[in-house]
Length: 237
Image (cartoon, rainbow, N blue to C red; front, side, top):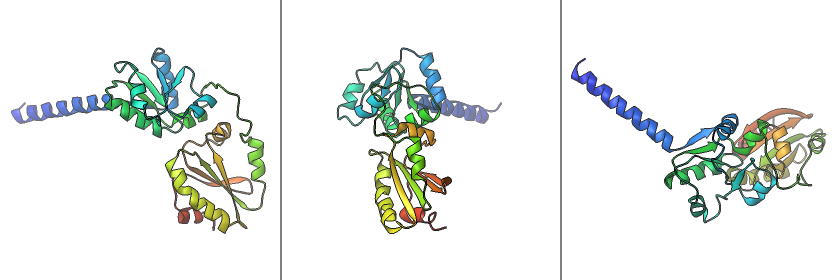
């Protein structure tokens, strides 16, 4: 083997090792089934729920502790954990926990596992959780939801959360559609945090999610932000 090939192989080996170390230092995103399996493999590793206390109290993964990512003292609170040992992190949809993972990596944590898709995907997978409170009395039942579909008009369902930036950005468009197309479309907004059972039943895995029904049948759905014009296109067909 000539010197040129040896040099090239050496460079590739170094790059591979560097990439491997970089990936491992950034933590890992795990789907719910893998997240649950990893928890069973590391029973002593802390599980951190970075949602608000209200969200946490309603329902959370067993043995999880609540450290709110929106708390100005988050970095100080999280630093009390052992940075050299594995830590599990999750939120509702995965966005806040992804940010928390980045903050933890920047603060020297060596092994952080993030729940990809958050509790929305965890619910959809039918995985176990615990609650410090009974189900909220104002949570919408599947029967109540089905009754909302009992109309000759189109029913546009918006699954949102108060903390979700794209949800907030899309809300004014939905309000305009509600007012401008009142004779044709019924707009229903459902808070994902307050209706976790229903959201799980509807198999919603991201926020915001739009569901369009006609004669009680789902005819269109979308996960993620859309402009008013993009939404309206599906209402005038």
